[in-house]
Length: 97
Image 1 (cartoon, rainbow, N blue to C red):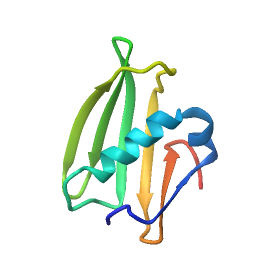
Image 2: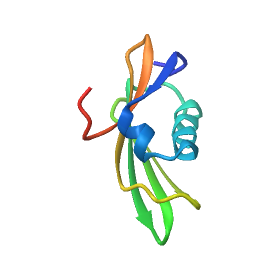
Image 3: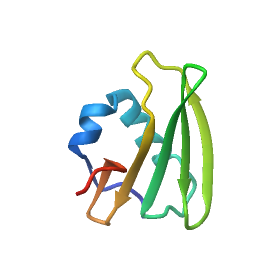
Image 4: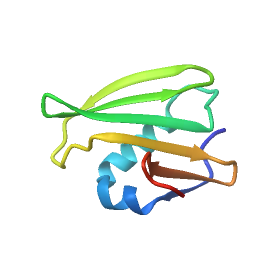
């Protein structure tokens, strides 16, 4: 998977995730070393007033942590990005698509 195909957001991501954070998450996927699993997982929390991002994939195992200063509200939750070879979709973990 290379996540270079057409990209989509669910309504939940569009409503609850700032455009800047969306771009950052796509950037983290684009710049991670291959091979990339079809499922990318982002766990987002608040750490001392900063956006903490834990980026993981299962196969092959990958985990990176980031802290980002932000002027937008900090999002707490989990985001999935799924690549099905024809398009990539960013969605909130609790959304059903």
